[in-house]
Image: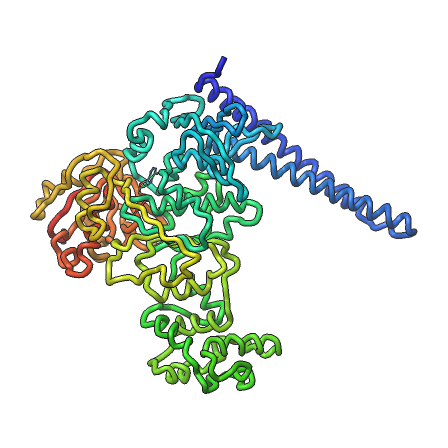
Length: 606
Ligand SMILES: Nc1ncnc2c1ncn2[C@@H]1O[C@H](COP(=O)(O)OP(=O)(O)OP(=O)(O)O)[C@@H](O)[C@H]1O
């Protein structure tokens, strides 16, 4: 008799519940044994090296003890992983099942969870969503198909794909993924409240998102995706995916995420721990540059007025005169016809080989005379950093994978430096070319080698109701007709043409556990408004807090990337939003922050 879905869940839930105390005790016992072995080693620790045979005996006993410690460590590691996974899976043991058959074999059920789980005998009870076999689930494949594992193509026949909503031992819903119209589970998730940080999306990752998460063939993955298409979510799921793929050679410290602000870092905090991974390192670009500058003895407090794009060209031209500050013999290592950077790189290597590198590299070259030779007014500390990175060939090898969010906001200087420092890292760069609030950004792919780069697009917008999505789409330039909404229509946006306080008061009432944002054009307006609404939560760029239930007040530049159940935009008809160059982009970004309700107030509120 086949087991019902509910029985299967019950059984697994009971097993996890039993395993948690067993594994906890096992870990404690292993810890005690390890301490005993160490103590014995301490007392036996004197080296008996009298005779040749005594020496051999001593070494043999050290070797035995070492092996015992290695075995204990390995057992503790396995038990700790199983315990962590059991705890993570207890509330939701799995979210999907695929029934598939390998060539000539009987069909089997594979349960997919946020992490994998094996029983004490090593049988896979739940497969990690990142396991190779799970790719057939996300790729929506049925019938004869295949997936890639260890560089091989594995043919399989998929006969069933099911999704589950689970609360501990209670099976709340089963959806047959082939038969379902739309994606009921996705719609249910999207309808939920947004009163805190971003959530993981493992159970409902869509096909086009999965292709980005699992992209394995290119060193540089560039994603241009519309507002609310899941770029940040996909970025974080991809962090988890790469950590799984490299679980034997990477740790979370090998990952670096560049975010637009500290408030944004806060907003995405927690997503990776919810997926069983440690929080990766995240920083803002100016902080990264300041830290890098310190390694070269440079104090970089501003990126303004830099000359990186000009320098990128200038260093490719020949420079026959020895740069002031450099040993002439070092410069003479290469022909006069070679370009400046090639000569400087050779010179640097020669200085290294002859132990003549300067103690303080920041004082090494005569920056003002170098600037003069290039016809530049000055070389800022940031310029100097760029030149030193290029000359010394510095690469940040401690970062195996770099992730950049809100990529459209960065200028050419950022890509020039990142491409130089992280040329050995895997890069994932996500953005939306219409979400730039000021000026026009460069084409990012021009900074990377074409054969190492893949450009991917996301056109479906998940965040908001159909009415809000079609409203903000009109401001999305060449994307306005391409953006697809998945959510039901909902309520159309409301427009308040005058500062009507009584109407505004009613807009400001927000249901419990929902978030409301008052988005202003300027920082000054946000802080002044926050003083008027005593219960409001002011979010600033350097805030260590993020979206809260109730009223949040913030300027548009900080609202970028965040989302709220309800949004009120002030100054909709102000110069800020009607600006001929950037007004449309600003309206697109602002109007795409609300998931359920959008109100536009023509005037500034102050
Ligand atoms: N596959 C999915 N399943 C469930 N929720 C999803 C999925 N994709 C996106 N979402 C949800 O849609 C919302 C928007 O996602 P996200 O913030 O990652 O998009 P984005 O493209 O980075 O947005 P923007 O550029 O507008 O800031 C989030 O609430 C996210 O959880």
